[in-house]
Image (cartoon, rainbow, N blue to C red):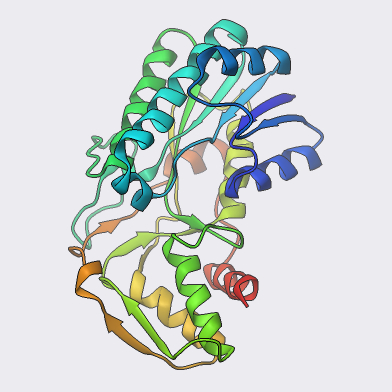
Length: 292
């Protein structure tokens, strides 16, 4: 296939481009050279690509950044999605559209609650989550109008190259610096008792590849491990892998209420056979190696 990908130079985009190219597809990747909210520019780029499939990854992906700058987050995550969907409707109406939103659209629940399923209501609590939920609902509307839209809701995923504002690489960089003697053996943290669903980025890329298959019904799909991991356990494992010791200091300014966000990917497994392959300890080991 000829596959047009937005956000192709990003953390996930780089890996997806490489994986699709290795599989024999022709990839037309765009990133900052195409202003994603400029609808005519987006339409022109897509028309030039003559695409059989579209993957929309371009986004403001940091929840912290979106909290500080909610207006740009809404502009990029919602209006950028609208520009892509409109371009698909006018320039590539037969293309499969993989619209990547987020597991954050469900919000959070109490620790021990059942994993989120695609049929659960969207309850986005933050500017980032709200922008992604709006994009997801917009994708559903375009699907109702006949566009082949697959809405993908990935939960937390990480790996080497992820920006340091995300929790796993942030911890890995601090632990690696302590192990190398470049930093005092002290880490300031927020609430370590919250629970999240973590995947290796390569497993997420594999899920996206499978969802590009036109035999897979257009629908909403969680991409998740189904395993809840306490944030504090993630940090403890990194410290153990690094063979170091450090003091953990709670910074009251960083503390948030304890909650959980775990996804159920049964629908994805049933339709595509996908399942996570990379052990999470290996993901953390790769993060530490990259941070050293």
